[in-house]
Length: 500
Image (cartoon, rainbow, N blue to C red; front, side, top):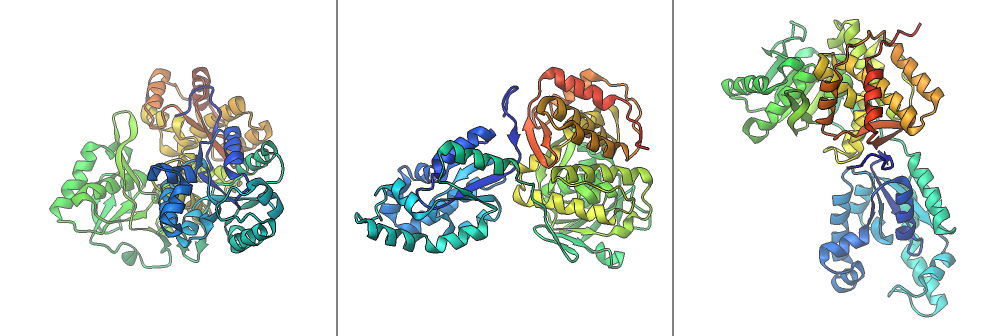
């Protein structure tokens, strides 16, 4: 956990340095990580630690095949969404399982020419012969195929021939500018996620499943067992109600849940518990649920003033999007969805047009969230970025009973205030983003209960840390000073006029 005064932690997910032997990955990687405020991991040291010896001794004693198995295991444990800079061995790209893992990270290629590499190695590798000409042949035989593999995997190539400090600075610049990943729609299917746009299909086929549970707030024409939804029912009592319904109907799964975000959270939690895990299908019925809550598998209920305090990671078997369900959505519901869509757009450095037809921004928002969730399904690091505006927003939602959309809008305004004052976010960028919130409508002044809001905020699972913007598209995690947090709460409570 970062402390007050600690540097901001870039929310970029795992960054892996690849490159030939002699490129300086371990030395330069440690320097770059220190500049960025990222944890640094040397993959070879992790392999040696797990084996109780050194990586070189593992390679020499067990052979290359065994070494690659150990390497894949160590890499898999590290590439789990955490924010870290990892220096990998030269041969990490040789094995297909490793390359599949590297697809889930930002790969940077630290490269040097053969002469520089050989001069730095100076015979320090057992596979290098003593004769210089033979060294060159051995080196090229070993590295020839790897160059093409690195070129395919790498997001950027960094020249490693300079001083370690200069090269570390170049890497830090590349990492600081890395974008959050987004998925892409392939027709009606979202890659990297079990999301299918079924808007063209008849509604009965969209709702197919063993048992359909429907949010009472959803359109009355929807068939299924209707249960109370909404944030007030996302509780232990609401969870028991759903579990009793599953017991009464001897639910075997897959359970189909149709409703808003709170209802999907509730049914998803019940599905995680029912018979120790029952498959379920999410069919979001509100703009907010479609843009955000229906994917990711973070199911939870609230406990007292703590939002999402108890739950499980239990991703839906499939999320079925049926945009026809939005025909009756009120302007307020559309605005709630747009608040989450705004957040997603800011995280990837995009502007969001405020057209009121949700089809385009719902699909765009889903693609952004799916890209992050697919790379960090259990919220080890990268996924934390999705909490932009939610630390204050969740506190206000619980204490003042705001709609989630209004709470997020106020939370985004407080995050902008903190980003500008604490991180130095460009004032022109902050003003532009504040105007985009204002275009969603006016916010009345809020009679802030600061004491309860602060207490609720401190119980937040992020432990007082805030997701802020160092720049548009550059989220970081930071613990601001207490006085800045109080000022940010006051900013969230202020009246905000609608943009003309």
